[in-house]
Amino acid sequence: MSSKIVSLSKNEDFKSILGGRKISNKYLTIFFKKLSSKNNKKLNISFITKKKIGNAVSRNKIKRRLRNIMNYVFKNYNLNLNYCYLIIAKRSVLSEPYENIKKALFSDFGKIK
Image 1 (cartoon, rainbow, N blue to C red):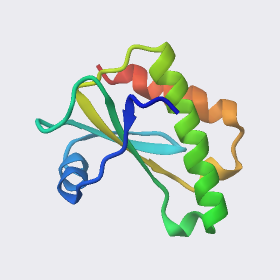
Image 2 (cartoon, helix red, strand yellow; image 1 turned 180 degrees about the vertical axis):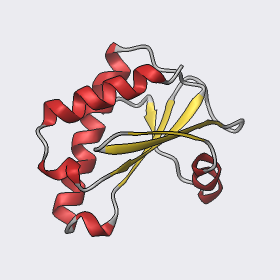
Image 3 (cartoon, rainbow, N blue to C red; image 1 turned 135 degrees about the vertical axis):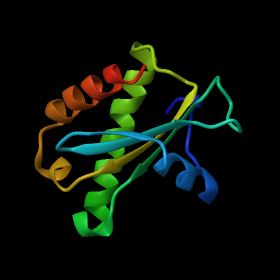
Image 4 (cartoon, rainbow, N blue to C red; image 1 turned 180 degrees about the horizontal axis):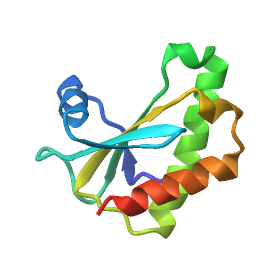
């Protein structure tokens, strides 16, 4: 994974982003907000999967898929690095093909400008 993608770590950051704007589809919910305490040269993003989705193996599979998609998006598309992103997965991510999730994520990040 590229070193330019950084995960959020502070509880205050998570609470602040949850109060920001959001975009939802049938696979994911994306929260995003500008934070003053972040580095604008790196992509600050975190992935959340709830325990209701499944066991640890399936939750980690979802996170790996989403991280892989975001790595591709970061390298090939122009993302707004002023925002911090929080991606919350829904149960339908587990059973859907990789390409469908990728298309939905691309369209959602196209809406964020």
